[in-house]
Structures are given as C-alpha cells and as structure tokens.
Length: 380
Image (cartoon, rainbow, N blue to C red; front, side, top):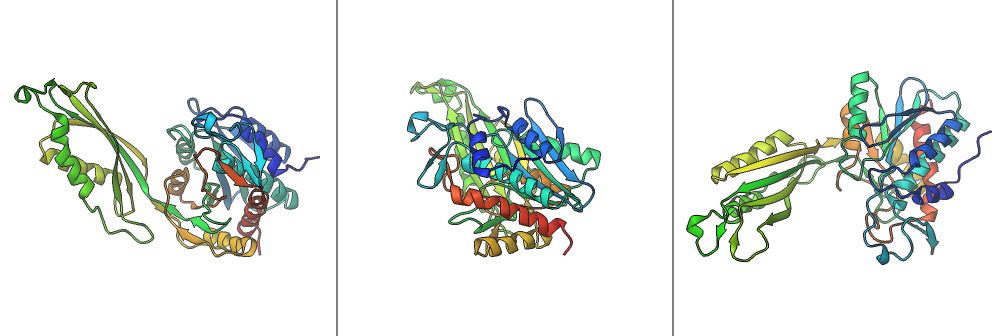
C-alpha cells in the first residue's frame, strides 16, 4: 500500500541534499522511488554529468507534464545565513533552506499531486508525467534541452506543461507566466596591441576601440515591444582587460553581454546586427555566441483557462498573465508544440541568502497542481 507523502516533510528531505547544480545528490532517486510506488513508469535519461527523470502514468493523449529541477544555485557565504542552508528550518511560518522556493517545494508538490491524482483516478484518460533535471540552474545544456531533442527524435508529444518555477509575487497564484523572452549571450574579444601607455602610437588600445561600438549597442532602441512582450534589451554584464598595471595598454578586451528579446527577433538576426556594428567601427574581434532559447508564448487555450480557474477558485485571486522575468526550462518544451505555463510559490527570496517558502503556501500547492490535472485530463 502506498504511503501518502507529506509535502512539507518531503521538501525538507530534498533541501537536506546539497544538490548544487549539476549534482543531483540522490534527489531524483528519492523522487523516483515514491513515484514508482504510486504506479508510475520510471525512465532515467542521463546526458553527460546531468541526471534527468521522466516518470509517466497512463497512456496516450493528452499528455500533461509537470516540469521541474532538483538542482539549486550555490549558497553564497554560509556565514550570512541565519541557519545552515542545507538543514531545513521553520521560523515564523516559513521554511528556510536553499531550494525551498526554487524549486524543491514545487517538486515535492508535484509528487504529492501526482500520487493523489492517480490514487483517485487510477484509470484516467491520457498521460500524467513528471520531468525533472539537475541542470536548470547551470549551463542548461544536458538537461531539458537534451531531453526535448530526444523527445523530438523519438516522436514523443507533450500537450500541456506546468513548470513549477516560483512565479507568484505577493500571494500564491497572483501571477502566471505564459511565455518568456528569448535569451542570447555573447563573449566578445576585441583584439589590440599591448604596449606602454607612454607610447600609444606603438600600441592599439582595444578598450578605446571598443567603446564607440559598445555605446552604440547600449544606446540602441532595439524595438518597441511585441504583443504581450516588453521591448527587447541589450545589457553588458562584464568587461575585462589589462594586466592590472596602470602603465600597460592591454592586448585585448573581453566583453560579456546578453540580449533578452521578444518574438520580433530571431537569434541569428540579432547576431548579424551586432556583427554589422562591430564591422562598421573597424574592430578586429572574435565572438563566441550562446543561444539560450527562442521566445515563446502560450496563447489562450485549455491550459491557461484551467490554471486561471484554479487560481480564482483556490487562491481567491485572478492572476496576472504575462511574459516577464528571466528564463526557465519551459523554453525547451514550448517548441515541441506544448501549451506551457509557469506557476509556483512567491519568488521574493530565490537565489538569496535565507531563501524560504511559506509553509502554508507549500501545503496548498499540491491541490492546485492536482486540480489543474483534473481539469485537463478528466472528461467533464
């Protein structure tokens, strides 16, 4: 007989495993054992150093996936935490620990919701699934990106995907992410000639050469926005050059930058625009590009409708439905043709010292996920 999982206890069990990306630290094995006990088929999909778990119950369409990650970001200075980040602690109604909000609480809630759903509806139509990776907070190369490529190659279809990212702002359920901007990163090396600062005619300063081009890229208004998306943005995140001496002109300058862009652009078009600016300024340079994911939008449909109804009924709030924020693994599932949303706990403390989640919100999450599944998979 399956023992019902307690979402608070299970979240604490997961937090206690220091699964700093991409090291899963046995989280997925623990989850797989519970899901297997509930009747789920378990498939491990490792790629490189990354663990990926695919657990399914039922057959055929529609296929509803709960998408999450078991890895967490580093803790930062442990001495700045009120308590050990990997020893879960409850204070004033909040559960503290790295990953409490992002996103071991949601993952635990997925498991409880899945157990309850199949126990109540053992012969349900369609497929309910949980997909987890240990590579969301890191490079996101061998995680859901690779799994999505595998699914595309093997013809596996996903109809609906609920990502448990912490999306709520002030109260549980007040925001649904229904899309995300694309992300494109570049590492630019501007090449100069090293020399003594007293003899600039014998050198070529790559910082001086790069500045006009960078100013043009920073000052450009890339677009005026797109339906349901803000304007695209270009941000420089790091500049490095020089030997540390004040009398040496550097031989090269490294600039790291990122675009967050709406569906009015494709990554290759932005790359061409950057090259055109650099070429026009006569720079000698090299760029290494990383395409993090194209923008996506889930338009009004069954998934948005179901999630909205649950938020209104269970949380007493009509959620804002927008495409703000950063990125998530949902960007790899949407191109498979799936309707995708993100819905999870309040995100105020994510990636911070003393990360936490409301115990009350955590205990409410499984019912929200379960009811979304019931609205999507069970005939009315």
